[in-house]
Image: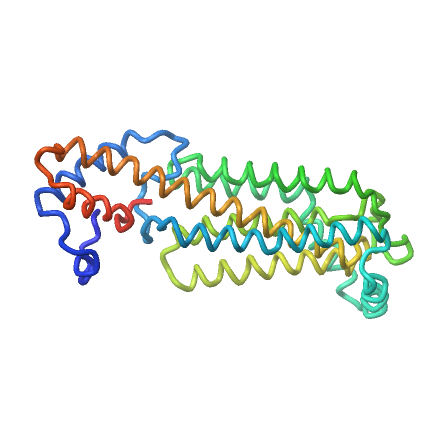
Length: 300
């Protein structure tokens, strides 16, 4: 399980001895077999090492902070100007004038995928499939928390701003009358799909599958945002707010996932090394090198 790839120990200095590696692997195997069902680490082999904390989490937090600041700025603007962005009406009129067959029939059907009665079962099946194959309910927990945050943010902001939707003459059926700001379809799509993409990337082995997941996931998110404006049920600023806030929530949840896996992994491997390798028999410097292997073990 410990990665013995050429050049690995040359980059980190002298690694654990053969006996130490065997003891470390045995102790780790015992802990994996006894891990809880809610553990962020799966009991099945994964093709990618456990992510390193530090820079990874910092980049994720920065990726969440940028759209969050943009969302707050947009919220302040809409709060002061109930009409939203100056281009909202122009963009909507241009899209309505550009409608054509068969898109006026296809887009409403596609938009229904993002509705709660349809999107929720899809996410349940997706999370359940990962939980079954990876023998851990962590994916269910992560997606449930993400859905809770995205739905709560949508309901709270809609009730606070209570912005009117575009007039009915611009809407395609089915007509919608609830608060317009932000777009719940877009917010949920960006939040839940981004977290789903990160989960697939953890376990997908083939490069083409990883690329296909990213391309299709990103395409779905932006297509859902565009469909809401195309149908005439949202202003441009509605989907902008939904996309930015959804992306912020998604990056926050991905960073929590990375931190949880790294933290759990480090804790368990440290305990395993202490149980199999008594402190009096291993010098502190060598123990630190042993613990550094935590991020190169191919169990996720």
